[in-house]
Amino acid sequence: MTGGNRALHTNPFVVNNRTVDIHITTRGSDWYWAVMSIMGTTMLVILGTAFLRPARNRIFYYILAAIAFVAMIEHYSMAANLGWVPIDVEFRRPSIHIVAGRNRQIWWVRYCCWFVIWPLISLVIMLSVVAPVVHTLWLVFLTAVMAVMALVGAVVRSDYKWGYYGFWVWTWLLVGYSLIWAPRRYASALGRDIQRAHLITSSWVWFLWMIYPICWGISEGGNTIPPDSEFIFYGILDCCLIPITSAAFLLFHRSIDPERLGLRMRSYDDPLPGQLHPAARAEEKMAPTNSPDPVNPPPMAVSET
Image 1: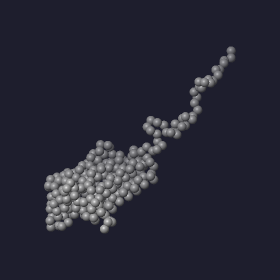
Image 2: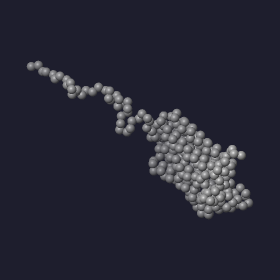
Image 3: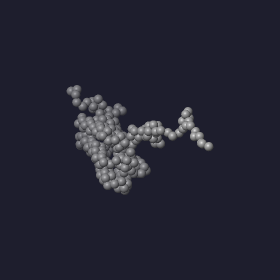
Image 4: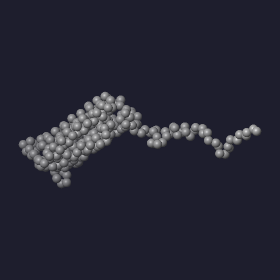
């Protein structure tokens, strides 16, 4: 048969002349093609919705669309069986056929995209409460560290990988404080609508970030579930984290003017800082002046004696 999903035939299970034993099947690839389509649709819907808003109110739309775009690239790469390396497993399970083998596919492209996506999600939430720059940078740093710890732990074949797993979980706890608890007073100072939006979205995101280490522990870490099941688990989490979170965030902020948050973008007609509006400049040019004409000066008054 020449039709159907041939990604695994075009891109076989060989990297740097090494073959992998525990790998995905066509079912896993098909699922990630579907997730890629969901992410692409999410990006297009966000961008399309953005054009229904004034140009100066689109900052959140652009960031959320960028998140969906990176996620689409991530799932495209993995559906095409690209962006992985074979890593020897710590726990060999010869009695379980679906995870029996010496090494397993570890998807470095997934963690690279997490390194971009997770800080951007943090940035959106912190911008929505006008958190100080130092708090925002701290949270962005922590979420990037979570992605790095997941990557480093996944490529370590000994039990030392669980040290990085512990750092990941500890960072997740710090993220919870910096994402939910620390910004709550900034949100409440801006109004109940912003406070409610922040509490719901930040709690939801932090909860999902708790599930990611669980999936990692039974797949890349513990070699308990096969890569196809790993794809299903991560795919569901990604759909919850990106399309659902984006929809909820934009729904909460549909009636919140970004100018309240100091996030008003310059529109097409706005003047540059220190310059007059184009219409004001035109009126200034057309306005009559009271300065004397140097060519035809007014006649001088003659006093009567």
